[in-house]
Image 1 (cartoon, rainbow, N blue to C red):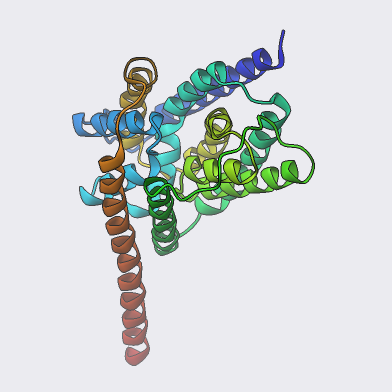
Image 2 (cartoon, rainbow, N blue to C red):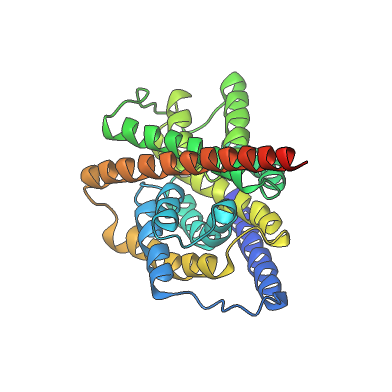
Length: 301
């Protein structure tokens, strides 16, 4: 068997591990609340993963929807994004690793680095209080908006032609993907930054697709397991993202394949910046309220 075949087997094993772990956790849930996703939640999974497969990204757009309609509490948004988008991302990885050629050594090392980054990052973020999550996600969304703006304005490195990384460039790629994996735990998508990193390192931008989708497909089950274990996610919303997302990936990859996304990207930039600012404003108000409460307690004493 080829290295790619072994990679597919490992990806399938990660997918099965994740599905069994998640179903087991859902069955043990004792809250009594309904876990059946709403039609709107499932539609959110479909729309965000459809455009994710075409290159828009799903984390920032899903966060904007969650906040605008107040579907998910701020402190559990990172966990919900990772848990809900895992299965659609695994489907993307199977498709793009199969159809796009890239050096397997480069692919495997960058995937391993991202998984380690997520494993370390998720353990921290899953325990953060609400205000820390608001601040972290607010800045993460601004970064996502900036990256989307760069793609709209075609501000990026001159595309390379290489399909592999060696020497110092490979080392930089490993460090970079480790960092991006850690940031995934905070809700900042890996796709945009990874595409820019790959271009800066002189690789063919097309090679970024199996790297970024493969990285997310392996790191998200690892990070999601920590969020699930700590209960730091919205079960109902996550199930909606998964159910709506898988058919969206297949339709986008095999039927639609490409769309003129110029105006969609501009809309995403506006919505994401608005969401980031409201997230940071909420964090500022919570800090002010905490100070006032502390001051009132001091005066009473």
